[in-house]
Image (cartoon, rainbow, N blue to C red; front, side, top):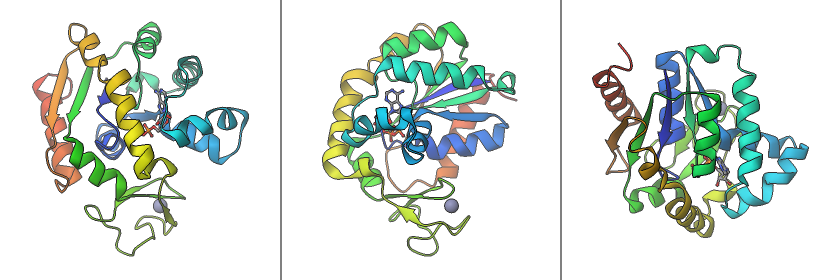
Length: 218
Ligand code: ADP
Ligand code: ZN
């Protein structure tokens, strides 16, 4: 089972992908998480990509593709499947993926823009374990402390309003067209999320239902 979770920034891809991965016993590959980790560790790669992340721009294809290929090739349990979160974001990236791994489906999240802005501007992330919270819709028990590991919660640099606007523009211009590209190549399972306060488990259940309907899981 290999699928791509697709949708605009703030659609909830990361939140749902991590829960689905636990449920289906497969791994998540999130290029955004990989890059943020490299930035945090101040590696060569991290220094190369930091500016793009902070401005809400796409990291150049050759860098992203190289990271993805190494990641997939280095995965011992890749045969059990994976969920791609935040990749591909351009047609070039989609073509590179086809060369190294076959995907079974696209799970497409459809989210109105006002919901995205609500989500992103209130999002907080755990410094230690990466768990995702929302100050309005997915509140931690104690403000600014992670429920799971007691790590400190912070706001991503690219969740500030000007950068959110830039990320949405980039999504419309470069990433949304991928739906056209995949239309005749892979089954596209569509999930509507038209309110910011639908609990994640409800969306996850909808996704599982769609995967079952498409005979991709039991
Ligand atoms: P979101 O989907 O919420 O925007 P991500 O964590 O997926 O957040 O991505 C954060 C940033 O990492 C992007 O704005 C971009 O700079 C970079 N990035 C992640 N994945 C890719 C990719 N596949 N191609 C280009 N840039 C990427
Ligand atoms: Zn934590």
